[in-house]
Image 1 (cartoon, one colour):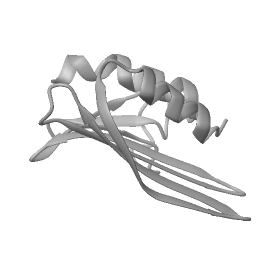
Image 2 (tube, one colour):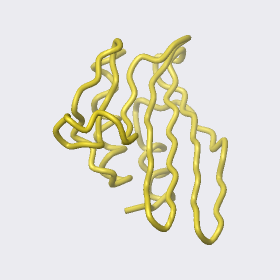
Image 3 (cartoon, one colour):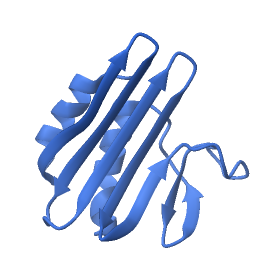
Image 4 (cartoon, helix red, strand yellow):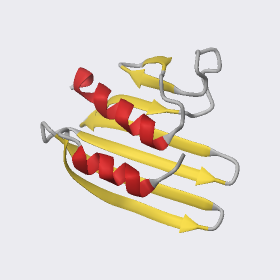
Length: 119
């Protein structure tokens, strides 16, 4: 479910990403926390990826932005009426259900495949 090395391999292979930086890599026995910033092609767009895994929970967000947020997928515990709760995404102040499931590897692939739709 949480393989940061495999996630980095996927980012490196993506035709959408020109560069990535691991801004936070914090691993302790009870928590993993990563924040990764990717420069997208076209270059003025960026993708921030955040993963936090504790013994009891896994929180993520994927946010594309250029001067302001464009689209964000996350699993914050709000919008319980949406199908696939808590997974959802935000676009233009609208919240919709998401196909993400909280599996790091498959979710990154889905997000990377959807980003061109929003650029």
